[in-house]
Length: 319
Image (cartoon, rainbow, N blue to C red; front, side):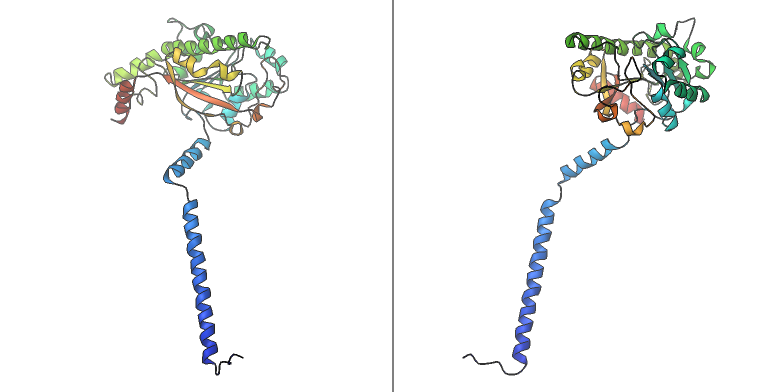
């Protein structure tokens, strides 16, 4: 039989040894946990990607509050209303247009939404035009050298440039009987829109650009020209759904053919335009699947510039 330890000293020594062992075990586990946490920490590149993602998920509105904007192909005018109510743009800098011929025609098409939106825009003094073809804007506004932009829009636009034009979810209004034909028709619509925007920019903005360049002794900084190029080009904005047949429209390729390139793009954030209700082209019904549940993208196009010219323009802006 083993001998019992006499006195308390031995007992306390055993207890102290056990305590030290437990403390060491705790330290070991703590060290191991720290090492595991280090492994779980994202790398610098991963953190950078996460930050980029956060930026991309932030509110994306492709124009500034003080800029001017022409909206083409507005259905029930709910998108224009959303811009005003959300404070994204000043009402006096907006021009809302419809392809349809009159308010009466739109009220028949959108009996539950148009009149309220239209009244709201009128009360906020938003410029509104009808019978405006996105592919022939100069003719639609009946513009010419004898009938300039300021005469059509009013004296408040005499010193204003046109900085942005937007077309949300272009559609011909035709059914999809022949998918290939349908794709070609929409490609022609988009190309027509791009070319028409460029012509309108040149005509409307040329006097403003010349005036500002003269004032600045020919110094054509984009900042001094309100973001316009020396030809008067502003930003051309287009929203489209993703997936087929929209992917087959090849939006970026069409833009390249028109000497345009993507300045930036982002997913269309429906929640930031709560008053906007995307409707079918020929009725007030929602599309087959509610628009808010569909993935879409918004593109901002600008005039294509060779890298060398782009660097010079950026250098001029920084000067």
